Every structure is written in structure tokens, then in C-alpha cells.
Image (cartoon, rainbow, N blue to C red; front, top):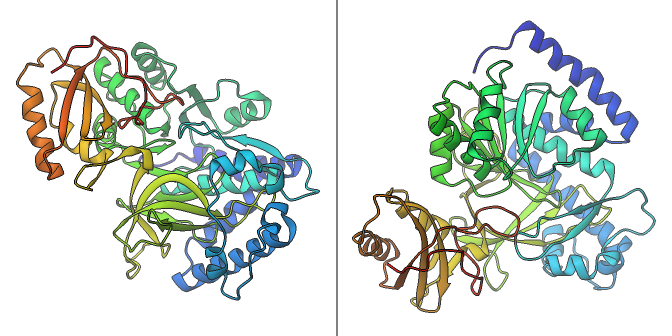
Length: 455
């Protein structure tokens, strides 16, 4: 990481001490106050983090039970133990958000902002939050960026999905020296042009959707661009596969930091150093549950259910994301590390799994761990079936008839079961409805457009 110049340090200070506090006063938000509070919280010992979470959870459940019509109508019995009390609440799904939206909001709260999810899970949901609650989410996200070396006002190349930035975001981008480009909307030549433009006024950081960051890495490699000079790469929004991380780190010679949150404003966990994800416990309760909604042990795969603790306009209590994750067993805080609990792995959506006839659970990583060693296949997707799955694939020029049986044998070895594996060559693999790549496609989804040839 290149040392900051005196001019850069002065600008960082100008943004933090003058520009953003002024913005908070004008917009009635809490960004800088919350960011400074989290900078202190992150260094607290484990018992103090646990005390804060317990205190915040009790306050949230009291608010939901006494102020929110939907939760009032459930008639849930209180408990002196807020975690026992929490377990008495039903699981909140995106369909419930859609059907009961009005009754899930706190009556009398005005000036709320509508936040809609992308619908990539198959269900679009809407939550309502106050400007202050939005700024709390932004503050935690900024803390995560700081874990990657970012400082307010650093030059940032950001990819996203909001082509119309609006006045407030446009001013913010200019003041924070952010170059914003629309994800999934650029071809290789256009991405190469964006990266070349950074040679004149270099960015310190690259951030955005994991799959789009990978597309930038591939475009840079094709164009022979290897001197962009990012200090760090910050990934969010979709799954950061091992091959994405490898290409990004190799092409841009910068570490990759992955973040895990929701469009609905829940900041769940982030990488800081190493591969584990720190869970922001004073902000969220994370439950990992089995198919019967019972807790799983650390090290076991569980469904991710979250409760946001610092938003009362529309309390999200036991909100089921449709994701899967694995918790790391508790242990002593490493020297210089943080005391937050950790997630060991984030698998992705529960639709990103397949159950084999023998009862095994296959995740996207089951397949990426095999196909990364098959350069003869440019891209692939998996279509589940009762007896196994079909592999849709885009063949590279060197592909030949020996590839399908060879890879089938590799898959059988990894899976540990001789499931049926069918092969379908295609010209194009369709993304998910949100525009993001999807390796395991939902059962019953239409096939990708293609040549129709079978291997």
C-alpha cells in the first residue's frame, strides 16, 4: 500500500471533519457519529460485545412487541432472557414482508425511505427505514472498507447497479472522489478504457459486485493492463468465488476483502484479515438453523436468519435470507485481532444447493472446486434433476469429446456418489433475474440459450 501524501491526508481530514458532519446535519442522518462509535466498538473485548448485543436485542424485542401491530398480534410471551424471547418469534420471510408490510412498520413514524431488494432470490421485498437508519448501515459498511485500508476521500472506482445517481449521490461521489460505473453494463473494451483512465489519476481502491470485479480483471488481462495499482479490492453483492479472488489478486496485485450484508440494510459480517468473516454482533443477531429451524453446531451448514438491532421503523426480527453459512467454533481472540464471533464460510442461497439421491448436500463450491481445473470449459451452470443434474457449458476451442466423461469421473469422486450427470453445450448461459451469474439454477428454470448439442 503506497503511503498517503500530505495532500491526501489533508483531504481525508477535510471530508471527515467538515464535509460529512455538515451533510449529517442537513440530511438528519447519523453517519459520522455512528462511524466513530463503531471505530470504538470494534476494539471491545468479547464479553462487552456480548453485553451490547444482549442489551440491544432486549430493547428491540420490547419495541416490536409493544409498538408494531404485526408483532403485537402474535401474542408472544416475554422472557427475561432476550435470546429465549427471540426464539419464540416466528421466522420472517420475504413473502411476509410483502404481504404484511404495513403492519410490520411502527405507526406514526414519518419520512421513511423505501428500500427494495433485487429479487434475485425469486421474491422481491421492500423494507422501510429512516434516514438515520440508512446512515447507520452506511457507517458499518464504511468501517468494513476501512478494514481494507480505505479512508474517507480516497479515490475509489466503484461498480454498482444504480445508473441514475441523483443529486445527493452525485455530490457525494464527487466529494468522496468516487468514480461510479454501472455493473453488468460494460463490455471488455469499455472496462479496459475505464481502467486506462485511472492511470492519469490513480484510484486507491476498487469496489463492487464480485462477478463484475472479476469481469474487470478478465478485461484487464485481455488488454494487457497490469499497472492500475489498487491498494485493495472490496467485494460485495454476490458470491466471491475462489477463482474470482485468484484472478483479482493476480491481475491487480491487491488483497481482496469480502463483505456480507443484505439490500434490506443488515450488515452481517466482513473479512478483515484472513478468510473468516467477523459478525457485527451489536448490530445483528445471526442464527444458523437446520431445516426444522433448530440451531446447528459450529462447523455445520445452517440457514442464515438475522435480526437487525438498530432499526425500529420496520423491525426485522428473525428475517430469513435464503442463504447458507457455517460458523467458526469459538476460541481465543488472536493477537491483534477482533473479538467478534466469526463465520467460517458463506455458501450463498439455499437455492445454490443440490440434494443428491443419497442425501448429500452439494453447494456451488462442490462444482467450482472441480471446474477450476477444466480450462476447456469457459463457463458452466448446473440444472438439478431428481437423479442428479445437467451441466450446461460453453466450450473453449480446445474442448473435445473426452472432457465430459473425465469431468464426470472427477465429480463422482468429489461427491462420493455416482449421480446422473448429463452434458448440454450452449452458446450462452443466462444470468439470474438480477443480472448476477448463477451457477446452480432453480429446478424448473428455463434452459439457457444454446446450440442444443449434448456431450
